[in-house]
Length: 88
Image 1 (tube, rainbow, N blue to C red):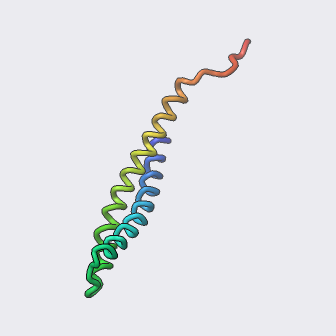
Image 2 (image 1 turned 90 degrees about the vertical axis):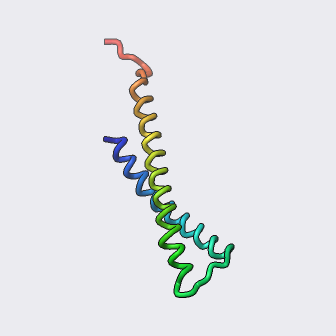
Image 3 (image 1 turned 90 degrees about the horizontal axis):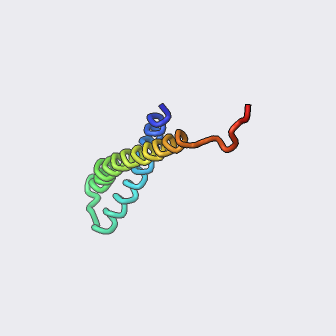
């Protein structure tokens, strides 16, 4: 359950970070390549092409990263032995 919830958290955080990165990449694209602003073409390019594409990649990457970290933590927790065994 912990792994699934961390996967969803990674998906959300990765999508938000990816969307912000997509906007930055899109703005850099229209600046570098002098994309025309006729009828809002450059805005549509940024918000309908770059932002969703990079948000999708970021969401999948974030989910995968969080799941791998959670799975490794779960494996390590199972293999741990108590530091001081109790003498009863």
